[in-house]
Length: 150
Image (cartoon, rainbow, N blue to C red; front, top):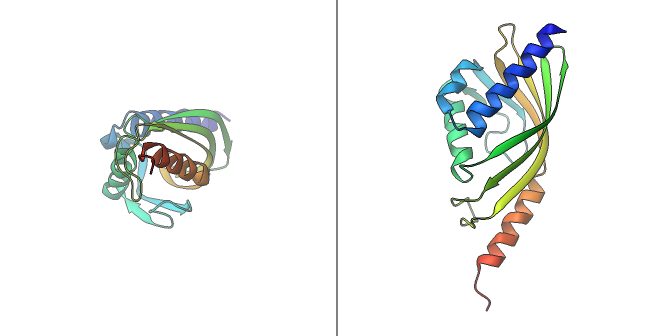
């Protein structure tokens, strides 16, 4: 029970430091030498195994369009070597994405992620579901609002 509690705290600290604050180099303190993205449809890294340098690059690229992004953790649930995090996310669309020029609008998303840990309490990968359709719709709406009327 105590071990699960420590992993939840460690995961929350990882999310805050690396994903919210953008302290990319801090990822080395949290992830194993190999990090696997088991399931994350729509993510360019879906199905890939990343070393620490590759993981850091993924964070940099993911944060580039939404540099002020923040996760609001809704729940943390431990089972065995995994911790499930349910979350709400928001970020200002400040830089271009393929097919979407920056709109300056705040985009919202929700999801659930299962994070796997090794015996040394390092993150080894994740399995994730997110509302990517909702993000796409918000980006489309933002693009339409930014376009001059014809």
